Length: 116
Length: 112
Image (cartoon, rainbow over all chains, first blue to last red; front, top):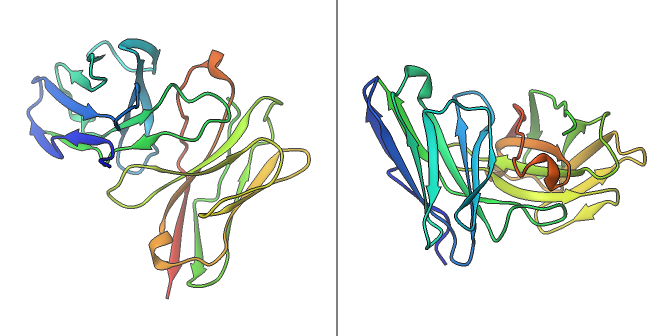
């Protein structure tokens, strides 16, 4: 079975541009979360979607947005890119939002975004 | 969610047990302890979780102290492939959101 698939794997953008990152969850998983991981730090929560609705949002500016499609895949959009947006962007999927006692999320390998 | 404290780095010889500590002194009664690890250039991987009882699965064992203020992840026979950053996460029920709050974790180096 395919795991969580993210595309592209690597991306280089210029300051001020926008970027769209894509995530396909594990088949049967209806919840997708996005995390940003800056070099040397742990992942930071950006968004969670479940059944195409936003269920959680981290402390990120409005330049960051996301959506989930009827097939449960998701896109993360970042506008007006800054140098500080350079990071590994991780997508995680689960059957539903991870309630207490459930097994954890399954993460993809991420998209490495470099802003120059 | 309760804050966790982990050592920055640890070493372990291959074949020996790796014991990774985590302090979570402000943990509350409804908060679970989760462990994830992240091997270089990969996404985090779920390892194990628990509330108050010790837990064991095919990857590791989780020992939680009786007062629940600290826990230890045990890899019984560490291999070179266990070299990774290990994250201890304490989180509450869904009313506080569904996010995982990763800290900086413990960088475990398994040596031959």
